[in-house]
Image 1 (tube, chains in turn orange, yellow):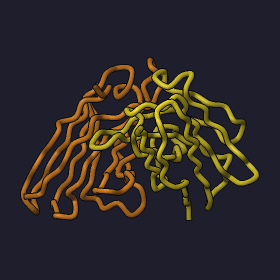
Image 2 (tube, each protein chain N blue to C red):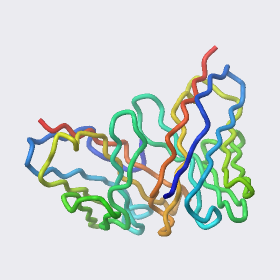
Image 3 (cartoon, one colour):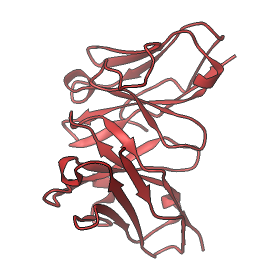
Image 4 (spheres, rainbow over the protein chains, first blue to last red):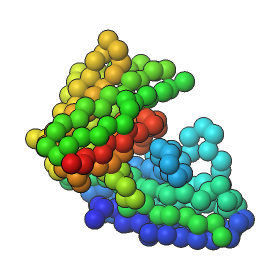
Length: 110
Length: 119
């Protein structure tokens, strides 16, 4: 079981919007930055969001991040078939003194 | 450009050890911590530990304490992850991953090294 909880799967039609939740606790999400990663099949993860809501250079503004209390959310608008991937949230857990990840969410663009 | 290039796939027998390397280039090696993260087939990401390439200090996940050793060679800008007493459950893709300046996010990942543990 992962320290952070994500839905196993989400789906939406091309052009639509989807959100992916990441639930944690006061020792991780509530008091630390959250990151989001996209993993396309057979490839290494790629950073999508850092510092909870910032996008690295080259990441389109269709991707956004937010946080409220012990939960974080990744939003993706204008869905494209190329967005089909596994998405992971991650942060630091101050109680465990460990980096922690969610179990991953598989996005299907119908 | 930042690159993390890992060593090739390995096949090991139960009880053996494996050492995976990760050669960094395109940035100041000592300026960024490095995580090791693994991913079992069809599973999620699992943090194994972190090394500070500057001083060599390490922090390991409790699950791997006693079985894992992370080292670095500053002359070649390479970090190493050594995992001993391998069992079938250690079959996974192992990634080195550079920790960003915020000390939380991972901004660059190696290509991954598949370690297969099988008798």
